[in-house]
Length: 120
Image 1 (tube, rainbow, N blue to C red):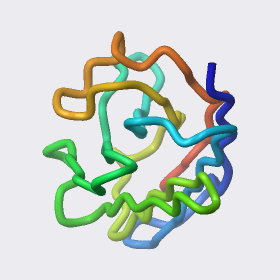
Image 2: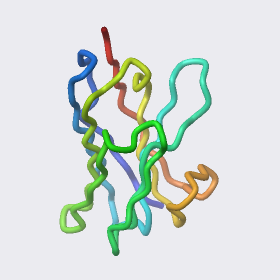
Image 3: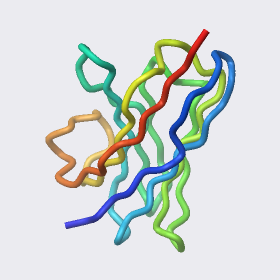
């Protein structure tokens, strides 16, 4: 089991930026960022294979968000630029074995989440 701790959430004005960080107790095969807004289903944001570095992004964040990893520190960061009101939600880091389709069932380990609030 991999322990995951997120940080970096906060409140930001629309158009601004935030950088989230996920620290893992080990080096998972695949790390993902998911988010969930009140009353909405969980949504896959971005994933990264920690060995090869291949990344995938949800359609709503392509071109605005960037996921990266530092295997020496067991961290995966999510740089979020041009934030929109619709980006508001709780952001979760998850570790699993398949990065391609944002299937939450393939991620057995989850962090507690960090809140991101974008205001007008």
